Image 1 (spheres, rainbow, N blue to C red):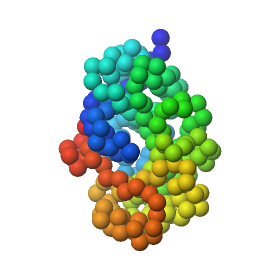
Image 2 (image 1 turned 90 degrees about the vertical axis):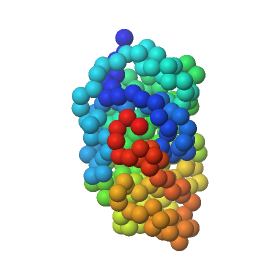
Image 3 (image 1 turned 60 degrees about the vertical axis):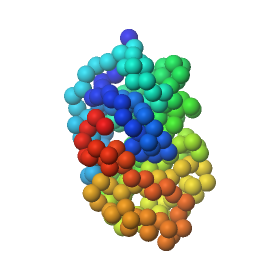
Image 4 (image 1 turned 30 degrees about the horizontal axis):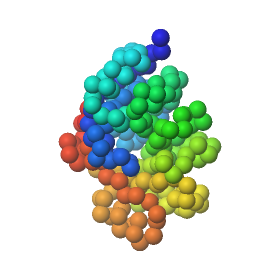
Amino acid sequence: MSLLRVTETFTSLQGEGAHAGWPCFFVRLTGCNLRCSYCDSAYAYSGGVDMDFEEVLSLWRKSGTGLVQITGGEPLLQPAAIALMRELLNAGADVILETNGSISLQNVPERVVKVVDRKTPGSGMAQAWLPENLRFVHLKDQIKCVLTGEADYLWARDWVRSCGLSFFVQVIFSPAWGGIAPRELAHWILRDGLQVRLQLQLHKLLWGDRRGV
């Protein structure tokens, strides 16, 4: 029986990305290979409990929502995460994967919406990016840059332009919590005519910076 190491499961409103505002069932897997300066889920680096697929699917069905997000930590560190996505899809769920961009997306099922972090210099983890992952994202998917300051913004702006990202994937710019003022980031995006979405963390605006929401 396939097992996953799980830090927590909970039902909340999706706080980020194209599905922001929709009820969603979250599966937060344990373990991460990166240590970002602004990490808000460091409690998922270790610990957790073993759960089999049927336990996860049962909890999802009880949640009453059709949307599931697999997150972490870094979900793709656990090979069984791919199989869980397939099980959820086969059961009728709409599945989102949130991943840090350092592990290949090649085997992620096509129907899964991929939300891929592009780590910036301010995160301290920019070197972890796997360039080949741009081959596996499409218009339904999202590349997210969490920005810690103007230097991060300028770096991300130039990277988005150099790759022509906005032509083949949705691009999200989000201020690190407690960092850039959202109004300032909005000004920079409009000033530079970037085709990106400004994204605030809705769950933190509603309930503050705490886990399980």
